[in-house]
Structure formats: structure tokens, C-alpha cells
Length: 407
Picture 1: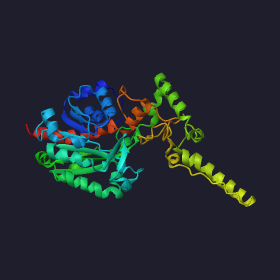
Picture 2: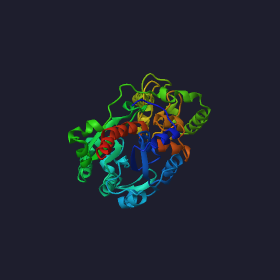
Picture 3: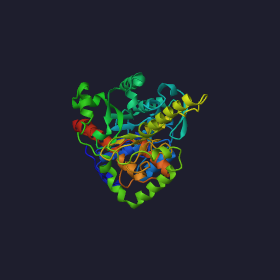
């Protein structure tokens, strides 16, 4: 899947082909929908529980026929079918990206499971269980294919039992389920973004196209590209964009007021390798301070001035060179306060338009919130070009052959 740029109009023209229909849960600002529309998908229903995210979605896709802004727990398959006119088994693809903080490799992992926490701006409990709400609706609607996206951490040892239960429960409804971690930079995304995609195909669909269960994974998941676009290829031209410059200066002003600023400005510009504020600035400084205070203690009896701890966020803040793909953009990492994703040659995080390019959103994507809200929205999205690559395979190797078999 090669990197390319596109517009909202391109999306609508592609979606108008109506190669397959889909519904999507945990839709956010529409990252998944961009991918499905690029692959020829026709959206029938959208669910998102944050109004601000739904505002973004509808601003970009005003022709969306049906949507509900509410907790998925309050939605049923019957309700969706009544709204859309779909019958049991008619839906081509059911998509969802359940909240991922419980499985994040930088999060609290099992320590935070089963507890109430604030995630995506709202207090929620047991958000690691929301996949089962998607599974519930799968059982009610019986779509031909199901796609469930989550963070790579779900495949780690600490979450392996949870993932196994997800697979088993999808399969209990009559599906063959496979999963794979896809790397964004190998699928047209200028970002080292790794996400697990769980794909379930209804068993009667496999029977109809004559596909053995052991072949599903190789047929569903796209092959990786050997060449990938770097940061310069994605956003280099925006250096000359006046609107982008205005926002860049706004970010610099906001970040200059933060506690991390004095460390951040010491980090080398235009580096030839990935550089960390923690490893390349803070750590060397602290080592010098420790050595100095050690000498002072030897000279002055009773000298014990404490050394403050360097915060973990220092070690997350990185400046990636122009000739590499960006690190994984995240909701918090794009915030001016945390300042994780640093521009290759400026003391700031990426602007909205730069981050949107790196996430492979449409060139004219419409944002409806504040600067930080917009940046957070981008960090939460599924990268469209990665989803398109997967959706193309699902259509060409599963849905299209099935439709042909039924004629």
C-alpha cells in the first residue's frame, strides 16, 4: 500500500461505488471510515459515545444516514437493523475499535482493569470489556465479516488470556477468527504505528467461497510494503504553508510556558537519529549533577541536597529525523503539555495539519474542536491508509467472491 494524499471529495466518489456496506462502532472522528470509503465501503450506521468526536465525524461525512451518539451498551442489533433496514446476515462488515488504555504498553495493564477511570474525557468502568459489547451485536446481526482493531499490547503476555477469550467468543457465534499486528509504515502510513486487527469471517461465507479456515489469515491480511514514506515526504511541504506556520508559532508559545521547555530546547535540531529529551538531555545533565554533589559531599560534611527525579515523560519525548517514519502518534503525546512527538527541527509538537498528514487523513479534513482537542482526536484514530489496505483484501478475497457465489 503506497502513501498517497486525497480529499473528502475523493472519499465520497470512492464510497459511491458501494462495493460493500459497513457499520462502525467507537468511530471517533472517522479514521476507520476514511479507510473503508477509500476501499469502496458504504456506511450505513455509526456509533460514537463522545459528542465532540461525533461532531467531527458528521462535519466530514454529513451524508451519513444513521448515527447514535451514546454508549454502545445502550445499543442493540435490532435497533440498528430497524434504522437501516438491514436484516440478520445482510450486513457485509461490522467494524469497531474498542477503547485501548487497558492494553496500552505504556499503561497500567492489569492494575487498572475493572476500575473506574477517566478515558477519552469521560469516567468509565471496565472499558477493557467493551469488545464484548461488539461481540454481542455481532451475535445479533450476524455480519459476514467483523473487524476489531486495538493496540499491540493486546497481543502481549499480560493480555494473552483476554485476547484468547475474545477470539473464542467471536467464534462461538459461527465465525473463524484470526488476528495480526500490522505496522503502519508497511501499509502506506508515515508512522511506526503498530495495531492488532482481529478479523472474523462467518463460517458459511468461507464455505460458499471454498476457503479453508487455515487460509483465512493469509488471504485477509495485506502483504507489507518494503518501501515507506518518511516525515519529510509526508509534511515537508507544509514548512512553506502560512496557515501551518501560524499554528506552529501558537504551539511554540504554548509549550514555552511549560516545565519541560528548558529541557526540550536543548535537544539537537535536525538529528541524524531518534533523540530523546530524557536520554540525550536530561539523563546526561543529571549524571553531571550526581557527580558534582558526590564531590560536594566529600568536601562538605553533612551536604545532602536531594536530586529530583526525572519524570518518565522526559524519556517519551522524542525528535525523529526527517528521513524516518514518525513514532506512533497518541492522544496524550500530541498535547503541548506532554510534548512527546517533537518536530524534526522546531521546539514543538506537530501541528494539526502535520499530524493529520502523518495519520493519513484527508487533506481537507474538518476539525471542530480546540487545538488540543483536535490533536487528541488525531492520536486516537485508526490510520486510514492501513485500514484501506486491509479492507481491500477483505473485499477482494472474501466479500466479492461471496457475492459472486450467490448470483
